[in-house]
Amino acid sequence: MIHSFPPFVNSKTKIIILGTMPGIASLEKQEYYAHKRNHFWRIMHTLLEKIPVSENFEEKIQLLQSHNIGLWDVLQYCERKGSLDIHIKNQKENDFESLFQKYPSIDKIVFNGKESHRYFTKKFGQIKGITYHVMPSTSPANTMTFENKLKIWATIFE
Picture 1 (tube, rainbow, N blue to C red):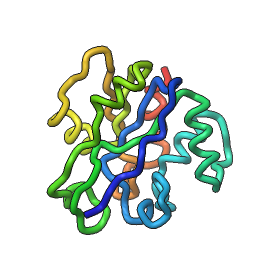
Picture 2 (cartoon, one colour):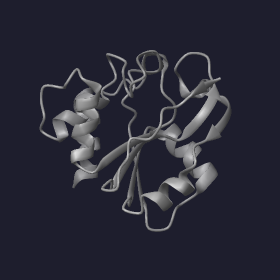
Picture 3 (cartoon, helix red, strand yellow):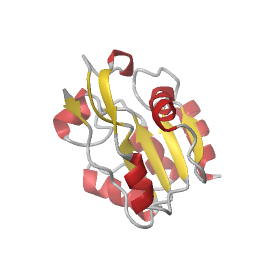
C-alpha cells in the first residue's frame, strides 16, 4: 500500500493542482513531481517567471503558495506496481469535503492528467462553485512535448 503526501494549501489558496498519486521517484524523495523528466516544476517555474527551477523543494512550494496555488493528490492511498496510474487498485480518495470546508477560497481545481480527473469526478462529481481544468499529464509517460504541455497549462492563468 502506498500513501500520498499531505496537502500543501493555506488560507490564501485559490487554485489547487491535483495529481493522482505520487510516483516511485516522488515517494522515494518525499517530494511532489520528483522524477527528473517530469515537466511539472519546469512548467510552473516558466509560467510563474521564476527560472531556473529551484532544486529546493520548500522553495518550489513557496513559489506556488506565493501565487495562491496548492498541491495535493486525489488518492489518499492505493496499491500500484510501478508509477503508472493504469496499475492503481484498491484506492481510497482523500477527504476533499473537509479540505474545501477548511479552505473556502479554493475555486479552481487543475487536474494533472485525465486519470486524476477521472478518479475525482467518479467520487465527488462537480462541486458547486469550483471550476475544473484537465491539463495534460506532466509525467514523462506522456510523450507530448514540453512546449505543447506548457502552452496548454498556460491557459489556467488566463
